[in-house]
Length: 437
Image (tube, rainbow, N blue to C red; front, side, top):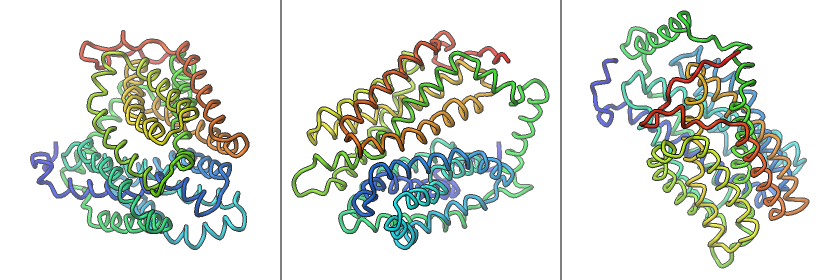
């Protein structure tokens, strides 16, 4: 417990400072992912296959960079250098799309997709881990709840979607300059953010936690080495979990990547389809926050395995429904179903990992079973289905996508054990058996 813990979060200037870091970073994130695919098709003139290639490059770059970023940030501790690099790349977003990316796409779409994917991943897919880790560490050091300061990111996502719609209506290219503006404000907040120095109470508290973890490792905590990883991969439930993340969790992202382009085909009248879509996303994010509050209670009742299966089945309904029922109101409904999917997935993933596998290696299980498996799926499926949109159309591609999700759901269900017998009466995780190696 450090000296700042006694100060209520709302009266702690650091709380608002680090909340601002989350707000303006996730404003950049939401602006990019809400408007990227539509901008690439309408303004840059890219084919759906090459849009898919760009998303594959983003995921592959993140897959390669995240371990490197994590290692460097662990070495840096409270220092801001790597976060500042992420901010710098974000600040270059407007100039990059105006003066680099567009000429590249005109020269060669594949080259543009590769360079664009690399650039965006530096600050988005790969950079998000740096932002999360930096703010989590400083939250503990300053004595306030990480979950509370993280809410600034959710609020930013909703607001950026709504305001982004008005920006798009005035000039779609200004979306990227809005990202640059957010990054500049983010940089100012990072510059003035006070991080603990050696000798400060917060610094010593986090250092003591790390030393305590090392002491625990020496006294019996399993070392994360090749044998531990192989033991996880031989675990039937873990293998089934990876299959579900590779298929369903990855295709959740892939489906949403180019859905705005599909949505625009069925919007009539005077309203710009992307403006309408941005408002739908705004409502979805607000609903998502409300559903997240209640989701732990539901998962404690039905179990994390059933929660993951329910997530996958909702995705099947949303994908297949979008293929066959294409009235604008129904497409809005299919999109709003995502407000239930994300909380289902996030809560179920964490509860399944902590209930079914040794909690002492839960971070390793999460990195391999969820993050890496999902990223590999995104790398493969983004390009495959992006190409399919050009060759056979969105509707048929969605039917195939829904079939893939259904197959991996059945297969993973046969492999994964029920987690409910590992849960205590309050839904928390009971001590799991150590992973056999």
